[in-house]
Amino acid sequence: MVIRPIAASDFVAARKLLDDTFMSEGYTPAHHRSLLLDVAGRSAAPHTWTLVAADGHGLLGHVVVCRPPSPLVHLAHRGDAEIRLLATAPDARRRGIATALVTACLDRARHAGCHRAVLATQAPMLTAQRLYTRLGFQRVPGCDQTWEGRRLLAYELAL
Image (cartoon, rainbow, N blue to C red; front, side):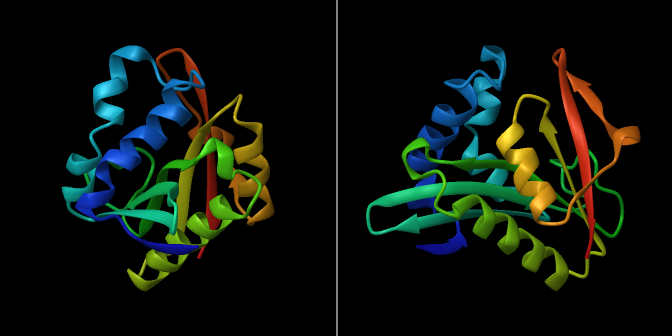
């Protein structure tokens, strides 16, 4: 497995991966589907990096890391990096892919001079919460948000 920046040739597979993860598992409302699947738009956004995990059979995972003034930032402030849209292919879970993707985001953030990584995850995403805690992220309840009636739990990690 290799972690690398997304390429245009990955866009179709990334859309399927995001659709299988966020839409099929009920984490994204149907009316946000087109925004979720705009892989090309996110990949072109300034101060934003989309990373994928791939092997000889295709894409195994996807994640976005951004920093202000990226239009994708929701929680991050100056000096922060924000991790978004972490997804692992359903048939590739429990193989360390999400850990490798988040670690790559943290490396990218440090290299960009960021001092803190932030993220938000939905309350039902217990596996993701365990991953973030295991990697050293701490809950920041004062930064929790509600989106489309869904509770988003905020986390941070000093870099």
